[in-house]
Amino acid sequence: MKLGLLYSRIRTGEKLLLTELRDRGHEVVKLDVRRTTFGVDDGAAASVETSGASTTETTGKGAAESTGETTDGSSGGTDDGTTDTLSTGDAAATLSDCDLVLDRCLATSRSLYTTQFAAAYDLPVVNTPDTARVCADKVETSLALSAAGVPTPETRVAFDTDSALDAVESLGYPCVLKPVVGSWGRLLAKLEGRAAAEAVLEHKSTLGHYEHDVFYVQEFVEKPGRDLRVLVLGEEPVAAMARSGDHWVTNAKRGAETSAFELDDRAATLASEAATAVGGGLLGVDLMETGDGYTVHEVNHTVEFEALAEATDVDVAATVVDWLEAQATAEDGDAETDTEVTATV
Amino acid sequence: MTEADCVECGATLTLHDDYEIGEIVDCTTCGVELEVLDTEPPVLDEAPELAEDWGE
Image (cartoon, rainbow over the protein chains, first blue to last red):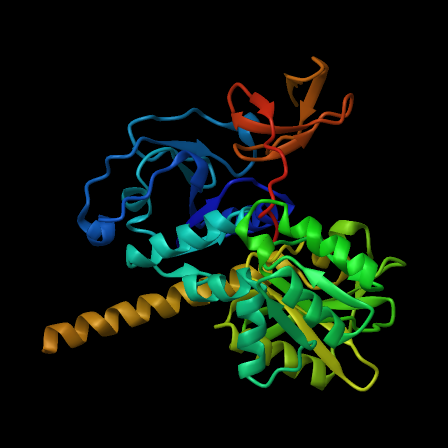
């Protein structure tokens, strides 16, 4: 498999995936989206001649054993046959013959656009732009979950501080104010009373970016000191962990303790349904226990899994790469079928 | 083992064998995050600051 990796930062998760991909002999095209351009007219890029500068970076047993680099786009390699290509030029040309593109961009804005470009270049991309769009915006996620009948915390959205205060008062205290785009538990506000609500709403309205004038207000769920993260591949839950802490935000990035969690049938079903609701893919579904069931409060489309890999016995990187291989094979099969149909017609 | 200098404090870092372009390494002396811009030889620079839309 030749896999295009959209990235801007090689984190532990990306490193785990890269190691697994290389160990299996797959070719990886690393595309640093900060150093690449994406042409809007490159949709027919399958036949575009390679014009972007690229270098090969030998990998596998380590850069210390590298045998050198080429700058003419020709293939370099290592003793074990694995080769990475680093693109510094034109995205369409560089990715044109990839079997699959994997979005691991750290920045949501880049993720949203680059997946659209990959799709426009007729490349299979994980996750799809539609899934990325729905997951990247909490309003879109909530609408998708609600439409699919997936239990999710009661949520109201307002576009003005006065109406936002009405939303807060209708939900009652405490309630939670969240940015519609954001992660790692940043800028969440638990509103304990009207004075705090007024202050936070005023602060948000003066922050400057229009997204802070989209007020996403959610009921506060009394969870048992933890929430759950479920890694879903396609629509199948493959690993889960509990994230526990004294703080009401139990995010691994905020220092929550993590431990393996055995999904019961209900939680597994909900995780699957939530993934389906946002379009499926490589996803991290977050649930909270409500005492008599679960509620899904978030679905992440560039899911990080280093904490999950440490907390569970599941070989997460291997499981993900298994799934990526299956996606590439499925796409290849679809392409062959399309060709046959075209030929018949 | 490959060594490189921290661009912030000048301390010598020891990079693990499979370091690669795009990877983030921490300077154990000053704590700054550094991004690997190139290999053979290693080129490091300060990693970008956290942006509002970073995350999952």
